[in-house]
Structures are given as structure tokens and as C-alpha cells.
Amino acid sequence: GMKMQTPETVMQMSMTVLFPLTFASNIFVSPDTMPGWLKAFVDVNPISWLVTSVRGLMHGEASGTDIGKTLLACAVLVAVFAPLTMRAYRNKA
Image (cartoon, rainbow, N blue to C red; front, side):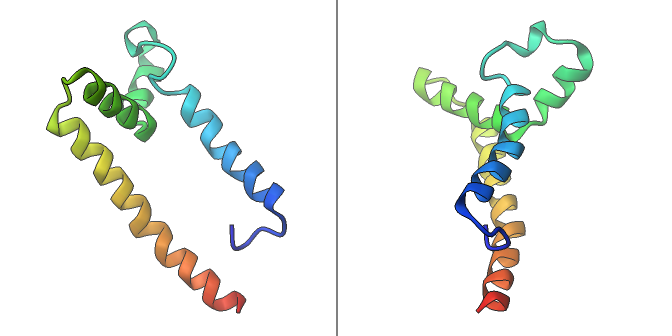
């Protein structure tokens, strides 16, 4: 967001990343019905981990592994992008 000129550009770039990740996850379709190559991608997709964790929590069947993978993915994203954001913010001022 710090590198973009307008809020619309930020929205467009975020949708460019989230759109394929969302549709290549287990949100809409069970991975068991997908071809092998797509199922392999869905199994490592962080959006799929999040959806699986939320579904498990809602049904009372959440596993610690699913929740752990989701929290780990969040931590990795923060660890990578927080320093980059702070660096961009410092250089902009």
C-alpha cells in the first residue's frame, strides 16, 4: 500500500493476489473432486488452511494442526511484510 499512488490501485493489487488464491482453495469445492495438480496446490494454499480451521471451529471439530498451520502462515506473512512496510514508511517520510 505504501508504494501505490491511489487507494484504487491498492484495492486492485490486493484483489489480483486474493482472487486466484480464493478460487484455488477449498472454499467452494471439495478438493477430492479436483484434478491431482490442483488438489496439490489447494492443500498448501493458506486460504484453504484458514477455511478448514474456521469450519472446524464452527463444527467443534477443529484440530490443533489446522489451527497451528493457519497461525504459522499468519506469522510468516507478518514477519515478511511488517519490516518491508516499515522500511517503505520510513523512506516515504
